[in-house]
Length: 207
Length: 246
Ligand SMILES: [Fe+2]
Image (cartoon, rainbow over all chains, first blue to last red; front, side, top):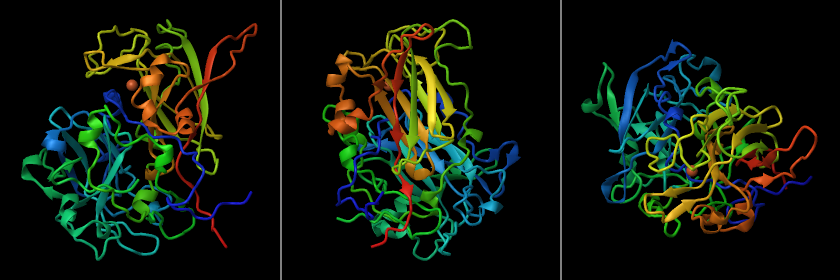
């Protein structure tokens, strides 16, 4: 069977991919509530600096967005993804899985307990600024929203391939900041607030 | 405008193009209020895909445990939930048609009277003591899956009956990476409420709309079996990154 050439959105391709739908209001709490702690996996403690990563989600008019599902995917303290595509994955921390879920309460507040990620290394050697991936699903969103969280007190690598695509003026919105008010149980807190729409809107990526 | 959505070719790397809007649900739907306060006003930003996006949780069942895929009763052989017993089967593939083995599926649905087990469900309908309507299971080596349940009822959105959702079952699927993490809801053919449902009709393309419909299988009337059976296949975004020469 012959293959079509590499295509872009400007060309035609078979319309076969299943349509995304909204998560709606009734995603079971039971699917979320035991999944917001990434610092332990199968009885092992994750290596590295454990942190709270928390904040609020708001929509147009600065109105809190409750009942949203947030999903996190990130590398371990050494920047290694628990996935075979990462050339270093054999050295991934066995106490760190890298995936977690949280939901916002009626005030729009969410909270993950996770590990401060290290700098990941692309197969071509490019070093990425330490980051975590965040997906947001909610009523009213018929497609997921995807963004990337960086950490304001971590070193920025030269020309991070994702950060450089974001207009300079919007970049600060992708940085979680240390926030003493979020510190608890001896762990430092980082605040990452999300503005779905309106003034100070969070940058989201093509998906 | 060209969308630069690929990374440098390297072995094992898959290709993910942006969702083609023509196959998808509109981002904003008239009369679906939240879509106008929540969908970003700024354009989405194009960026290359790095390891971070091309990887994703593997063996996710080690974080999100699976159970049995029979939602029609609480314990095998126990009392059946109220409503029409039915089965769903299907297959999950990528855009090449390659099966996604070991993909984790989560489903959640209302009971036969249109009531979810959920703190935010204010519908004045009873819970069913024999129905939970939520759970997880995996696809097999051929990407196949199946589960048993009862047909959900429709339910009103809000309190003034302005919008009754037609019966549907929600699916959440973990594919091969962060790029094909997928969520949708699947509808039943022939339901009069389908005609006016904002979300179903938010998929403008009729052919695409069929892809969120259960397909009824001919009822097998045999000595031993007479069961309402539906089929639903899913195609998740992504294909093998083979060199495209010429
Ligand atoms: Fe629903």
